[in-house]
Image 1: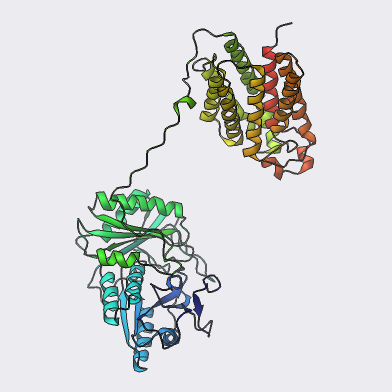
Image 2: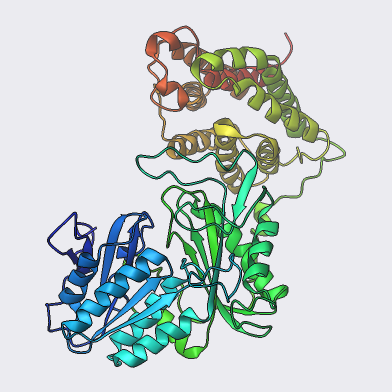
Length: 568
């Protein structure tokens, strides 16, 4: 940790003494109240991750799930406590209470001013009276760290810093749920949670929870936890309808941020709608974990303006979340989608009568799509060697969509609009790399054809084709010789340009371009793959098949060109 964060250091005596402290504090001279916390390791980033100006002054770390020794705690107190004294914030576990308490009494005997606040925010256990044990300390403890740290940073006296921490401890409730039990180093993982089960109300040391139940949807889980925390009968927290609250959604170790954010969204909605609370702040992340446990805890804190000011105050503690301070809107509404320009969304209507150009487009498109369908099985067979075996299936989906839409909505008398609609058809049904590459291809071609107006010449088609091929190369990252569909498209484009420049008949030039594409596709058998999934396949295996993407491109070009040539 201290190698990562330059404002932190640690006391000598490791591993017996594991104390992380602020590097800017000199022993005996600190002129503000020192805020100290700690506990067993395995809860990272707690507690050392909350050491920094504006939060903890030092954190005392025990072994995994074990309270730190009295000597380590005492060493931490001596290292950072100056004349204003120190506050110990302790989670409510017997070992922590006893050891921090013993160290506090020894420190007092040495002349230090010491106060201690015990946090028991667990709402899974029955409410008081519960004997000497009481509720466990969980992630809600971090709110006490932050508020007390902010008060100490302001230079407030020990009594006021202590009062702030105690006030927060009395207004926060936490409950957790786990899908797996954590793995303690050197021990076998418990099998008490079978498949399809979850545990509610467990502690952060892997100890059993209050209830084992079947897995439920996140809405149900969140609802159960919040109802337990806000239960009017148990009165865990002094929160009622109309109260302002802060929410913490905490990973217990192995729950990814994506799932935490889903839970956060559900929790905010339920707090606002079902419980009538104003959610002022939301903290989502890994704050107090339990090694590799898959699960989460929710903490709800009653807040007011002074507490919010403390929560938002600056801190150097590396694990405290940034970017969540400041007023939060009561409702979060999405920003309206910006509309696409109308001229980029041509009307998709098939004309009643086709012009000469429209008839040619119809024939070329139909022939190209049908050629792809006929090639489906071969494409899949080649792709089983070179990729994941679905090239033919993917391309066939696009071809069928093109044929379906061709008779319904292609504005064939408008070349640019027709190419746009081909892209829409492919985009609607085709996934994978092939789908997005042809989407890019048609979009790029559409721009050039649209600029050409209603009269589209052979050279305009050639320019559109060249631009489309260049776009596929640019965004796909491949080029000639990389064993991709570009090894068919690039030769076709170059040949088309050359033949037209030489004055050859446009239809013959297109036919020659298709021949060049076919030769380029066949040549991929001898190429070393440098892009796509085939780049991971050994060269000697690839040499048995051509690139399926190149073969598909060559065949639809070949079929389209043949359809345009006059009958012999």
